[in-house]
Image 1 (cartoon, rainbow over the protein chains, first blue to last red):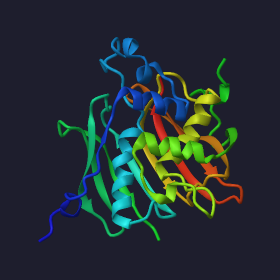
Image 2 (image 1 turned 90 degrees about the horizontal axis):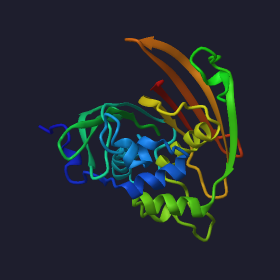
Image 3 (image 1 turned 60 degrees about the vertical axis):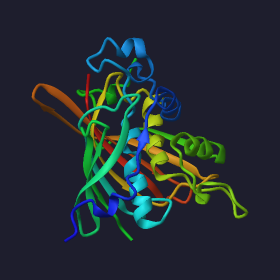
Length: 127
Length: 137
């Protein structure tokens, strides 16, 4: 019997986040919120350090779809639903774990190196 | 001063708050691929023209519009997304993004707004629809 995640164990796309990546993403997204780009300010917040923009720890989801479909882009009309549960910080390595296989997609959680869930959600692939 | 249509009290649900247009360049795609470690021939310029953009790059189009137009208040916390992906964006595309506030609610003493950003290309094909809900500071 196949268990959830069997197909993904071999690929397990990850992304390792550093401050330079966050700074560069700030320039791309226009989001220069100091909690992302100002370590001194972030140290005064409950987060303790800067946090990554929410889209950065999403990257393993796209990588996993890429590896499953063999296509560089999401199939047109694909849907993604997700909840952000905790922030990702510089130094974190974010991976993805498939928690259930759906008829046209999968449920997942993006996890950090401490096995804490950063994002959870599902992807419905189309076409 | 912030646009009153972007505040919890002043938001008119479903009304367009702002619209932006960008011409996507191969250099921007290359920069994003380098940053995120994408290495696929489809993202690079070839004999037939510019490469496509990684799907995740498209998430930034609406965000950039929202921040540039001061729609999102500083300190806003994103809690969830419902996104739809359409045709890939390609270098040379002229992309138009519209931003609408679609929902507002209060829960446990916190105020939430839901923003929807739809990006289309020059032939009006939808590239992506990003709908995210955020806690207002």
